[in-house]
Length: 163
Image (cartoon, rainbow, N blue to C red; front, side, top):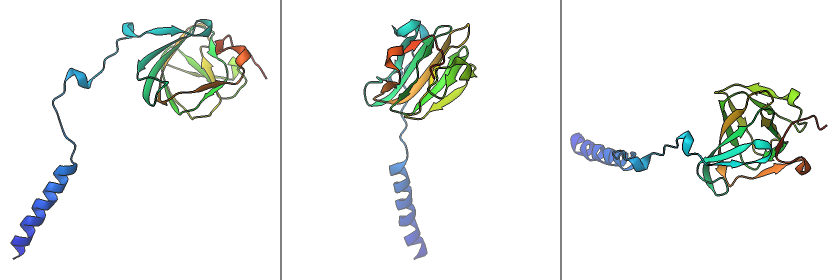
């Protein structure tokens, strides 16, 4: 009797595991996206800064990946975003300030490979405070919204202590 009960329970258990197990399919080229650097479409921003969308669309709901290039001595003016953002320095030294001063001396220099998390609503400014340019890769969930605290200063420029 014990074997008669055990076999149907084992079969039921196996069936339930298989029903929720992830499926596997042979990979195809459609399963992967490769974006070579030379294929990025850069858009000019203020003061020589450039932005490129790597994946997704920051203006629409969903995951997006962008790159931002800051020429030497150019930083974004103080601002905040409506969504959390994950930033990785991919080239040069990127300087991040975590207040509204726009004072390059108050920034923290972050070397290539460094990761920084930007919480939604956290005021900051960032870019290149030195003699070399810097590039970061930013990942977030759209739609993305950026609010600049001092619109008369522009989005990007030569930083100086504002307050």
